[in-house]
Image (cartoon, rainbow, N blue to C red; front, top):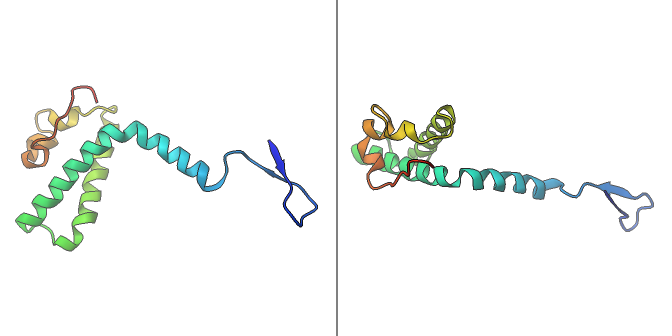
Length: 112
């Protein structure tokens, strides 16, 4: 652990090498790297769900973003509940079967 002496202060102050916002950012960055592939596809699906809901009049366009965030969070919850697999999207009765337009054109590799 390094000790830093601040100008104008007589007492040295110990500082952890990974502190403050930089440490927080590093932890978030690692998590995002691990989730990137699944999260990117979940974002595409949530965006299409939002667009469909706005076009059909199910939701007002001003609540589109919170609606999409809710869909994205639900997809992420299902992803973890399913053992970090995207099978819940493609199986019979899954998200893509129930909402075909949400998944149109999105490539889902078998092992994501």
